Amino acid sequence: MIETQSSRERVLAVLRGDEADRPPVTPTGGWWVAQTSGLPLHDVFAKGEVLSAAHLGVQRLAGYDAVYTYFDALAIPEAFGCRIELKEFGGPSVAEELLLEDTLNHPIPDPRRDGRLPEILKAASILAERARGSLPVLALFEGPFTTSSRLLGATTFLLLMMDDPELTRRLIARVADALIAFGTALAAAGADAIIMPDPVTSTDLVSPEQSAEFAFPEIRRVIEALPLPVILHICGKTVPILGTMAGSGARLLSLDQAVDLREAREAVGWKIALGGNVDPVRLMEKGTPEEVMAAGRAAIAAAGPQRFNLMAGCALPPTTPLENVRALVAAARSFLAAA
Image (cartoon, rainbow, N blue to C red):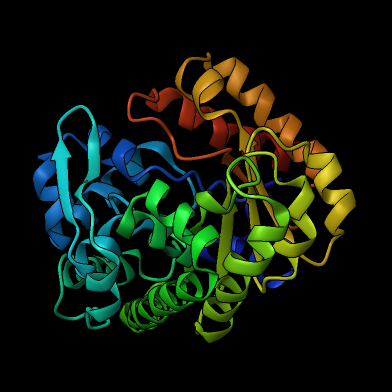
């Protein structure tokens, strides 16, 4: 059989709940793209033209089904005032966090003016124009719970959650307002969907009750307010919160390699798409192409071929071999050939 859809048609079909000719392949990994592109890291980090060139170039090399608008997930904390440091071998990190009062008093970042946000919007516009409808443009920002923890530091934020729940909710709501503004601007710039990781919501870090009380009300509000579909990723063993994730309004749940895809499909049914979940380190970074292809085919079989995106369980490590990403694509294409 031959492919009957473009990558954009394929990805959007899965997000809408329509039939796709094969599972799309949408690995994430902005730092991996930057490293693989061979372009200067600081320029990929800071300039929309170079960021878009990196994503277009690497997508052509690997053949997966999307282009992306990001290098890292720290643009919103930076726009709030956090100092971000880019290291050649460590990637971007928050080098200086904020005081709570500074965060609450800071104006909501303007996506067209503050930090790197205008450059990310520029990248979205360039990618939308150059993809010409053949590839979906996927943007990314972390969810309100995790972004709040970036602003203050994880320990300070989690202690605040226990000591002053009302102030914590106020902070998370303010961050959610910033994400809504940025996501709306991304849609206007040409993005087709938002990937929203919220790793601090993981049951490895907070209880299901805490995530239900503090994280998910604002996750749902962000998703409901955005004019484009959202892919929600939460790290770790998320089976205890799969029902809450499925009720968030997200169109696709991107799952960690710690989650059994058959168990996840049984838990959420077929009304929502799943994505995952080939091990990003053991297989994508350190495995052989043959092992990656076998794992990709197994993931498709476990989750069911429809309403499924083949992905790694988390972001690709920067040293992931290009051949292994091509093998992930081959796994999906071989399924088409066998259908």
